Image (cartoon, rainbow, N blue to C red; front, side):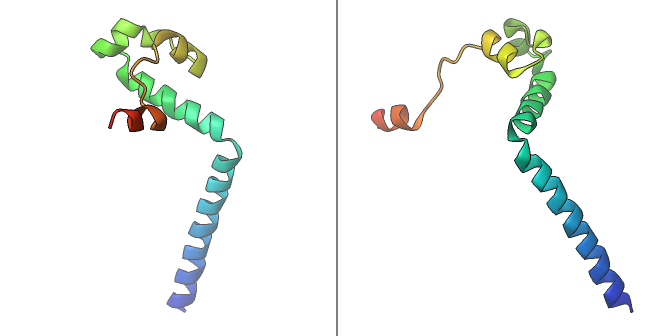
Length: 82
C-alpha cells in the first residue's frame, strides 16, 4: 500500500515538473529576460550597477543600451587569440 502511494506521489511530482519545463520551453525569451532582470536587480547597488545605471533597467533593451558590449568573447574571436 505504501509503495503504491509513493509511486503515485512521485508520478505527480514528475508530472508537475514536466508541465513547468514545458511552459519554460514555450517562452524561453521571457524566462531569459526574467533571469537577466533578476541579476540586474541584484547588481543595482554595486559599483558596476551605479556606473551603468542599472536601477533604470526594465527590459533587455534597457540593459543593452546602458551596458556596452565590449569584451564579449565569441567562439571565433577566442580561437584567433590562441
